[in-house]
Image (tube, rainbow, N blue to C red; front, side, top):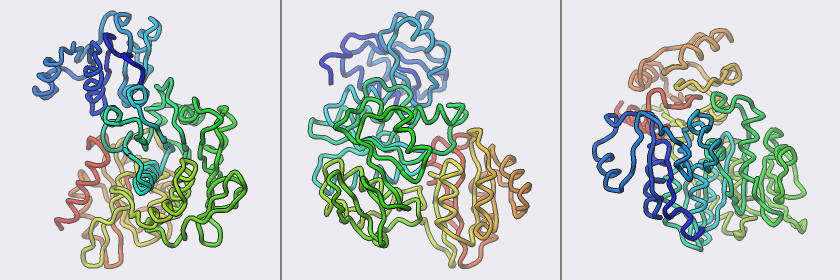
Length: 456
């Protein structure tokens, strides 16, 4: 952390969600003169929050924007805030530094970062890497796009801490100096097109994860996913590129061979980690996540035996193909983390057949044809809710799938699924959409599904 970097600086924190509030706490503690901005009016906030801001001496721009953006030394954007907003562009034009919460955390933190991004698999891989680092006895903090706001974690970290960080494209848009010891891009499929516009721009933003890395650091990429693997050459990755693959043997990186997860290091040695069938997380996509985690940890300095032991013990994460309960031979599986079509397809493939699928939610300007193409032989009933329900219904009917029920809320979805279910069926919540039309986040949506299922 740079000494007194924020002391007496005029900083505007934009967006008063979880990360914005954490940024305010961190910046005021470091002596900054903090202002806040949010599109919501003051009346939309909890009075206790407003009281806390007053106690900190924070200047509020709620429901409005500052007239003179040149009055600030820095803007800190929350991940949900598009950097292209007019007043942010005005700040940049005035020479104001604009960063996001990830960059803020990096500047606040004395520890080392391991950073993991990709369209899908981030949470599972990040959590698994965190468990491996903990098993190795490292001072480990798992966070970023999961857990606490990253600024909080950064303030709590010491010089020997390892920040195992799930990183989103929104967070990567606003980095400047952020430089992880090991980075990874797991995959790249269409997502957040409402924000990034094109796949080329989406990939460029994801590639920011390795933009500042040097030749003695590592970037772990998916050889089986050309869209992400090719980013290293296209965007000029300087770090050592270690691959991972479940389909082919590699000269350098992690791969599956003869039912084993192995790593080939820079000396050409092949190192055994564990058996593929020893993993407790189902599906080919989770094998990819495990291979990525093995490579990240090995090139992050963790002993192979520790990696293998922790991988055998890992049982997955909440909201990602999570078995909630079983009633009368019907399994209820929570995959609320399936917030895009590719993630939902992977969940459908992991369940295999006899699926009653609950889907729908916030519209990120996605198309659903490939999602529907995964149904034959697997999905027997489709129950839809949220803003995208009519769009998904139209795509399903165009493909000849007609077993569709429209529902108004999660209670109605679960009740309809239970009415249709037979012993041996799986009721799978894998929405293929974000949650923001009906819930604050995917965790809240998944918890509601679990609660509805357990009440049956």
